[in-house]
Image (cartoon, rainbow over all chains, first blue to last red; front, side, top):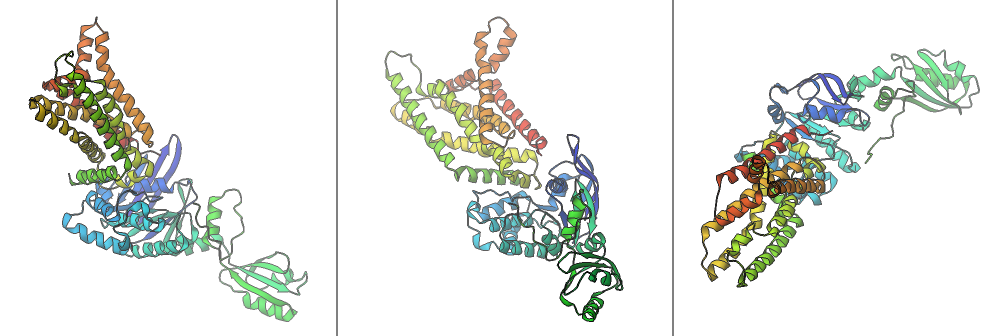
Length: 324
Length: 247
């Protein structure tokens, strides 16, 4: 559905997007994850035929950007960052304008408008002036505008920025719903969003894809051995040495106050052994939890160069929402 | 064509939903009315040379040009600059529309607004026609001149609006460009020596163009000049929109 080869954008000697290569099959929801300035927006602008690439080839739904940029635009629905809309127009006026610009046959306009207003739950504000709407509504009006021509591909740049938690949930649900019959690319720097909505993640940094896979695959591939957290009361200095020989354990780190971080091989589960050990030695086991490394850890590891051995973050990760 | 019309419609909604449109309309009419009054009272003085009031009204006074130079940038400054500022240009140009269609739609909307601005002045013609005998053909030629000069200036303003995302900057650039175009013809009178240059500049003298129209002379050279320069700027606007997909 979306084929990108050697996509590069250079601004005055500085490559913002650097040799991107990927293929996204039909119906996949893909997240572009990366820090600000990683080149996500620039990549999206090129895929939507807004910015001409410095080099590379883009094919969307069988249409090559080089041959037919206007035809490519027909297959793409795009919602830029910050949802630009015309504040002086009414919702219906805006959608009718979009319908005309997107070449929807006159007879279908009414039905298409009703359909997208229904899908995006904006029917109740159809007569309202866009400038007076809340951010959440505006986001959905923008989305409705991007959907009006039934594009096969939907490209959303940071679709949940600036929304309150309820609105975020609504928009995410909507995106998940749209994922059923659209190919979707969305960019974000909000990690839980990717884990919730996307089937596949590209971690982008300095204009390159540094990781590509399902959120789960990335997590297991990048984080390494699974870890359990233990907290013991009554254990003296000997706990560390007692934990090491347990089956499957590869590393034990004493974190003080009776807390230990136990790394083990992926095919073993030393929790039972830890419990029996504690019973044998008469220690009181107050915590015995598996630590699930989040995508956040993967992200931090891949996008920071200074400290690649940073400690994996435990679940639940503090949600990195908003940076309005 | 339907896409162009959709853009025209959208621009008109934008014009008439902002207070600026009504302020411009009101101020324009107040000033035009005042000048019309001055012209008529001036001509009532038996000492003055005989001419027709509408000939003075159409470009015969410096006021006419002051209006054009101030009002046109206000009409055009928003067109592209505002889309650039708000980012809506990105949505527009990722729809299957060409840059030329965007410029055409926006320009036509500005031209329509400009016509609306002038429309109430027809009342002056009616007032004069009721109180005296007037020749309607020069009046029609005068309006044609207003339309053509407007075409040229609005084209310039549309172009400068594509250059920036700041409306005020767009207006100032339009103002400067229009002053330049306007004065290029006026310096003709300062050059006595080189006759070829003088003729060339004379050809571009908008003041004499407008004066001719007001007399009822529709010189095709003038018409061609206004239309071609206007279209040149619209072409530049479309190219500038293509090139300046900023960032």
